[in-house]
Image (cartoon, rainbow, N blue to C red):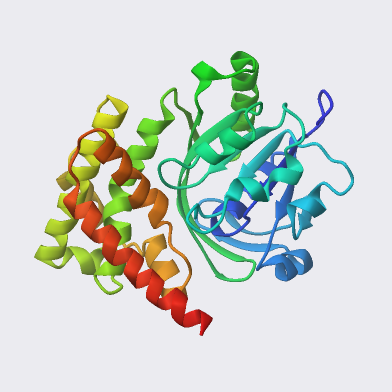
Length: 338
């Protein structure tokens, strides 16, 4: 743990297109020492750092405070971290990501921050680390990693953060909230738009309105970006139907109205805003599909579908797309093993 007036100690797990940007904006504050866990890009980052091309912040070579291959390596010297930030893809159908960070969560003062997509991601962490605060975080970021260690970033860098289940916490909520706010200020001071939400699940469902529609349809339609999807009247109608179901499910589960980023409440407003963007968006799920990587369908579709049905909300379009998406993924993952 950091001493008083010393830089806070942060371990960031999953330093790819998303994690690298948020690690960078923390490290440049001078108030945090960030250790990055890099896997596929370890050699490139260890040797040359991250080569970041950012429309928002300019071009820079970012060399993290420390670069390691594994979480175990990050704690080999007995280091206790103030924050363990998880930026890996949420793939609970394939791996228990709460297991990955186990070597670094040895002190109840360590705050676990999850910057991941989807619904129901916090459960495994809460069960495994009942004494550690969990900060559930929704990210809006336009970035990609076209090659190992090279990061292209646009202008969006938003984080919406909130404590998970603070009403049942067995820690000092006020003290933890102050530490989270301190971290948020470091990001804010370096260009990241940070929100602190009292109801983070509402924020998760709101982001899902786009992710469960555009993301998933980009794959089941055969591999199309947002412009190509919206050029098809039938595809546009499917996207709208998926949004309607997610909004109904989300508002039923959370008991409050969903408002999407930018203040949009209606599917047509979200669709039109997406269509008016200067460049078409290539959804992250489509990138995974093209690279033949596992997709986040469990947290973007399966978990929301299960919650919807539990609350008596019918979601036939979501169920259909989920069935198709898992079949598509199963085919290419099976072929890759041959």
